[in-house]
Amino acid sequence: MDACAATTVASSVRYVAEPIRFEIRLKPGSSGTSVGGTWGRQRALNVAVTQQPVDDRANAAALELLATILKVRKHQLTIISGHRHRTKVIELAEPPPDTQERLEAWRTRK
Image 1 (tube, rainbow, N blue to C red):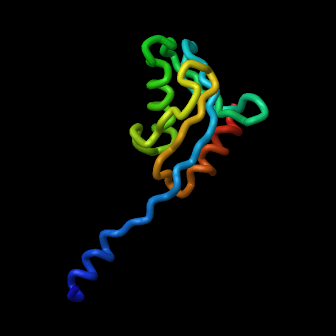
Image 2 (image 1 turned 90 degrees about the horizontal axis):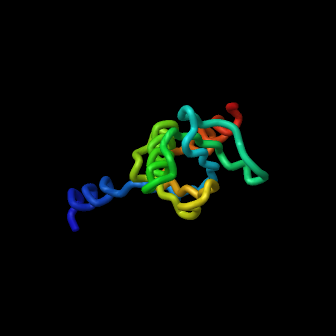
């Protein structure tokens, strides 16, 4: 392999952060959309959406809202468990370095 090819291969490698998981407590059918505060001992992040829990609309709205507040793309977020429950485990693929700080800031809001 010549020096030029080695440089090309080395420059195409990028670091990908490990996915993180966190809990949310979804409040579907709320009068407004909001994020803030915690629920329970696990400190699940409260997420309220106006959509009803029909045909996965509330889950989709929650993921869209979380993508907005965390400044990530919606496809990076996945519901790992709790599809039909209010408490859900969310996985964020390729999280930005400050994700934990952002989540903690939203947990302390009321």
